[in-house]
Length: 204
Image (cartoon, rainbow, N blue to C red):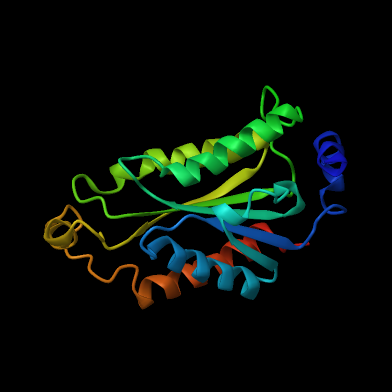
């Protein structure tokens, strides 16, 4: 944490304290978010960073400032993040608040980048059902001083609820989304991640 404070006061030190590492943290219920997380993790490695990937339940002891890039993924539940994802965010907020690492205002820390990704089905109103969850996660990282360079929304098949769920994946706002994210979606995410990492995290 001393390195974080040093960079706050002297941004030119950000290169000195670069770790070359990325952390991908995700919560997944039906597997949609996990598929995206794995595609992002592959893209991170191909982009030139060392990667660590963990479910939220495994990531509580992680020091977020040990990484140049944090990628956080979640599905949507009633326009918000599900309880396990929120539990992680709240615990980390309290932890960094107690350390006085969340200050007013929240200055961006040079060299610390975040990417937020949200999977959604949006059967009623599309992406508007997902954007509040994405903004919530984004605000968490901005409070910490991370520069959120990506806020990605990925269509995922609605799973569960039997026939009703199947109807949501066929006749919902987004049309027929059965099988999403599919291989084509994941290939695009992987390629997009490679470009993201090279643009924001690995340049000299």
